[in-house]
Structures are given as C-alpha cells and as structure tokens.
Image (cartoon, rainbow, N blue to C red):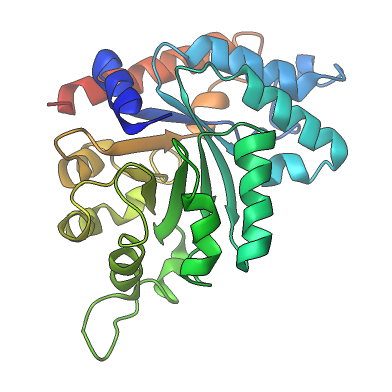
Length: 269
C-alpha cells in the first residue's frame, strides 16, 4: 500500500486506529478453545467486527511463531484475511546482515504479503536496505519504545551532541528512506517526546503502541504526534481484542474500536 492510499483511508474513516492481533489461546473466550481453528476463527471475527473503525492491523509474529509450523500457517491465513483496504503490519522486529535481511523481507513482503514489517536499526544501513528496496512496502524502525527498558539505551544522552540516542537513530535512519516507505515506532507512554520526534521527522508516519492497557493517552499522542496528513497509526491490542471473554467478544471489540474511532475523529483536522 502506498502513502496516498493509506492517507485516503485515514481521511475517509477519520480514524488512525491499528488493531493488534496479538492473539493468545489462553485469553480467547473459552467456548472457542476446543476448535482446532480457534485462533484463526477468533482473528477473523475480530477483523470482521472492527474493520469499519480501523485502517490497519498489526500481527505480533511472536504469538504465532511460538506455535511452530501451525502458528506460521495461522499467521499466513490471518494476513490473507485482512482486507486489502487495510494496512497490514508484521510486528517481527527483524534485521540482520544484508543477505539475511533480504530473506526476512522476502518472507514478510512476498510470501506473507504484509504491507510493512518492524525492524531494529542497531546493525545499521546495510541491514535495513533490503527492506527499503521494495516498492509500496514500508519499513517501520524502532525509534522510541514504550517499555521501561527504553531508559537503558534509547533515553541515554550522547556526550558529543547532547541529544538522546533515539533522536540520533531516527535522524540517521530517516536519511536511508523517505516518508513514503519509512515509519518509526514511538511509544504512547513517551508522548511528551513526540514533539521532539516531529522536529526531526515532520513528514514520516509514526506507529504508536502503548495506548490502552499500557496507559498511553490518545489525546496526548494526537496533540504531539499528528502532522498535516495525520501521520499516525495508533495501535491498540488487548483493550480491543479481549474486551469480552464470552460469546459477545466480537461485538464488544467493535464497541471499543468504535470508541477509539470516535475519539480520533475529534482530533483529526
């Protein structure tokens, strides 16, 4: 999906909601668990219920890879079920030496057909260039994350410049791609830093986790992070997909997704 198509979807729906399909067999409704296709059927029901209120779905690949070959099949079928109108993200946090990265890119962009994949930038430009070489595909780089461990490295200041390490990473990586193929992860629990990020990359999209159970404020994220084309994908996972643990799980997921969309419409320019 190219940038104009993504922006069009956001404007039409007045939504920049991304629903995270981090599906855990132990957390889905009990009446589904006996079904051999429980996770896939759960994912399909969530997608059907929320598709009118979101513009994107994000699959955290670890939840599927942990199940071995069966999990990979479920992930592939879930990815195929995501409507082509919606931006699909493989939250895989890959990147390695160039040749290895080229196979990671092939797996997620060609084999599984995702629009985007998350990557870690630590190994430098040659580890990301295979992802960035694809047309109408997106590389989403870890910038400032929402976990407590962000303080260990990302929020350390560099002696020679006085800027945070995450700022140096974002500034450097932004030169390897462009706002049409490069996004950055910026955690909602670090909303006060979004203004600093926008000073570095005013045009790039930001994928923002941490709203919902992690305590991030949608209002703050929108105030500090939005640009002229919105420039945000705000992810919510558990708050939506586990809104209910009974037979009404899909209906309750739709209600929560609609609530997010309604609030987003207030902030959308």
